[in-house]
Image (cartoon, rainbow, N blue to C red; front, side, top):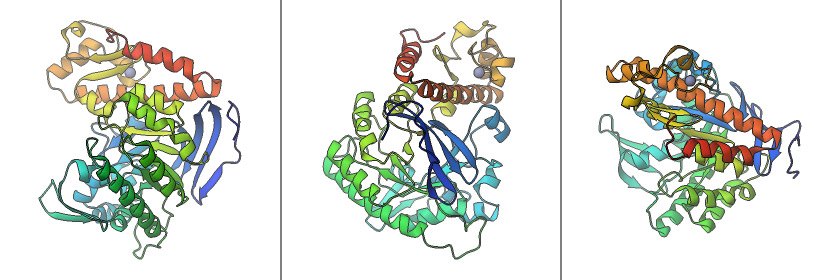
Length: 398
Ligand SMILES: [Zn+2]
């Protein structure tokens, strides 16, 4: 496989009738490319904001587009409990519910079941848990996880996986690797089963990604990847990271990723959004990211900028007439001062969280676009060092 910039792999591997991944440039292991989905094209590496319950909190789809968002993630766990997958389907699917006509990826619900729900039983068959909404007992199997995502109508769906906590003993993580591989096989079989009911777009082929587990254990990660690759899936995700293992351990796991997964499939690092981690992951061959970081931190009055983070409740911004980031072209930076945004937060105006969300989404969009340009220029390692120094220097507030 050629490993230099401007090495087109044309015409792109057709991974399903409606899904394609094309890698257009390499810079070391870093890849720039394009995903073609039923709802449009996505330039990679890409960051997906999280639309937990059918909404990226506080912003409209027009605003998402304006901020440069290409693709969003929906949480199966939240949507299956409320309003329910069948209800979403009857409303025309998740695209209609969200009024978003761009690509959507849904997770399988596994991560939230293991982190949010009160778990009743876990077996090779699936999980039984108590809904955090109404206390009802819910059963989630690999087959049901696929059917829920089919009902939601996502462009990319994820296998059900078992995501043990970071502090779990090695034996528990090994068991999760074995069970997740078994579930990947069952999810693939279900995804290939034609849908009996006629629901919205139910006939479109399902694009299923597998999820690697294995914690920080190199041998378990390798075993997990091998089991998934054997299934020849359209894409592969790295799960079970960002759980407190730390940046260096994350990098060690990702050092092996490029060799573990085929070059012609997209790779998705789940739940990671810290800019330092994104840079490290892209340098190791990752193409897709999702995280609540830009949106959740915005609601807590924290803005991401090219010169570091700003805590907007801080008194130092009270009479600062400058925009959040003088390099930013977002709606917020074109119209509002730091002092004005600080005032909106202190006065508990709902516009405050919306404005900072718009800015943070724009920052992450610009950041990923800058990464893509650097890969095309063959200059990512040097620029990554400069950006990281600016983001994380000692007084990182501009
Ligand atoms: Zn801005």
